[in-house]
Image (tube, rainbow, N blue to C red; front, side, top):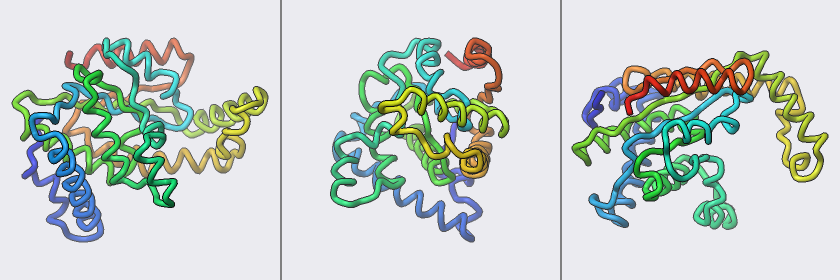
Length: 249
């Protein structure tokens, strides 16, 4: 399905109300980042992947366990793009070292530059984007801009690994116990949410409200694959493989 920049969905209720204000802010950020890319590379140099899987999942659903499996299933080169890892990019480090915050604008710029790497030309898996309504807005705008830039329509897929709240909390706490038992760097870097049942439950609910709900608005635009992630790793991978088999090659 082709989404053009003039689509009413990008106007968001004619710009009225808080949602309209937020969407206008997202538009200003996106346009600014896009202008920078055009100035750096020119329109001809904006060669993004022909297919992108935008991977998200509930806490403890196994995203980290399955990203490389998805890459192999799609026969992509390179490695998965993990959005949290982009914060180690020198651009982000310089900003943080100067006391700045890495916000939506910086994340968007880092991600789009990463996607321009030739290793992702055939396709990419992006782990952890979009996570908020603003980032969902960015994704709509990105897709619309690509449709005006190239004759070949890009293929975007939303892939969500899902577990219910009780399973998510159980897995988060299990991960915390195992990290503490292993000692070393894993114990030092363990999340507080992996140690406290209340915080683990809160993290799950934040995912449902701030990530899962906005993602549902993309179902009419992109192919969406909701993968039930209960059971063993092999069980989940069989479901992922079945879901990817139906994706356009």
